[in-house]
Amino acid sequence: MAHRWQIAISAGLLAAIWAGLADVFHLVTWVGFLGCSTFFAQTESGAKGMMMAMMTNLSGVFWGWLIIAGSGVLGSPIISYALTGIVTALMCLQACNKNFAFIPGTFIGCCITFALNADIAAIIPPLVIGAALGYSMSLLTGLFITLTDKTTESLKNSAVEET
Image (cartoon, rainbow, N blue to C red; front, side, top):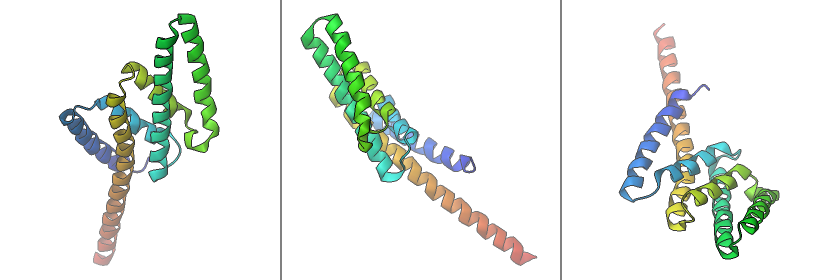
């Protein structure tokens, strides 16, 4: 990884900013980091990657909510287990749509929903911000790489001119 320092600086800087903002606005910090991780884990880049992360995570939130709500209504543990299996299969099948092709993103959203007992208000804002955080880290890293490359090139040109 040729640009390790640029990645480290941009990720560290924006992670610190996110942690502070999450604290100030009472957002669940780790949910944002999972949204950010989803951005980096899926294969698309740029705004398209951010949308893929958001869409798969949010679909997982829906599926998790459906399992929790459905299990509450059905009442029987056996039927709840069956519902979990059916919904899990649907989570995988939705990947036939290219906008939902990153199955792990869907499972991440679902697991967050289980962990926070379907508290949608606590889940959605940091999850969406997290995907945007990942995209921002990518953009800032690109900027740092460009600046570093230009500086390196200038230093090389200066050294050549001096000889």
